[in-house]
Length: 209
Image (cartoon, rainbow, N blue to C red; front, side, top):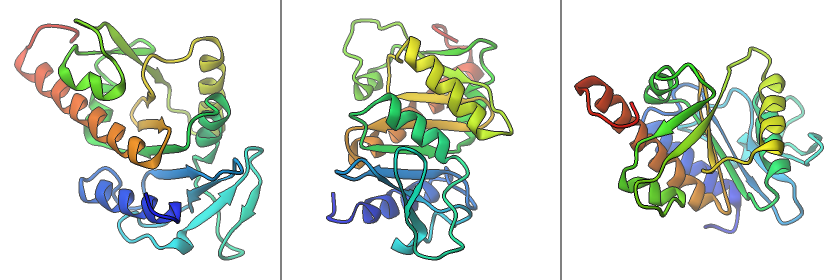
């Protein structure tokens, strides 16, 4: 991790962009500072070419603390990051990406959870069990993002998730972790699991699908 959290976010965004998970200006990344405020990608910035001027610092009340230019606006999905940081005080990074596989997986179930296959990669999300039965929370994709954020906050206040990741139907995943490096790993692990699930559904592999 670098001394400037924005550098970690820039490197992660470039990698996810190269993987096709942050095409155009899609997706958003944030990292939390010791005072509780957090840097988040500004709205409308190409994720493969970010600089330190492409971030805005917010506090946990949703107020702008610092921005490079008066016209800079925080990500349209800042409310989801706020929901995560307010729900999980230990979270230090929150990453949201859009992948084809995430959208396909969100259509594998009509419910509000996605059962995950009991494969080895679940250990990377902290699941150390024999033949684990783990599900990921699935939320509806509303045009008004604060509505999504409220549903996330309300759901997690009642029942915290078993894994540090959520899926928004036809939209993408959001992960959170105790560091930017851990959040980076979670994104990679979840997207691996999703690729497995899509492939398994195509060849008729048994299990949770």
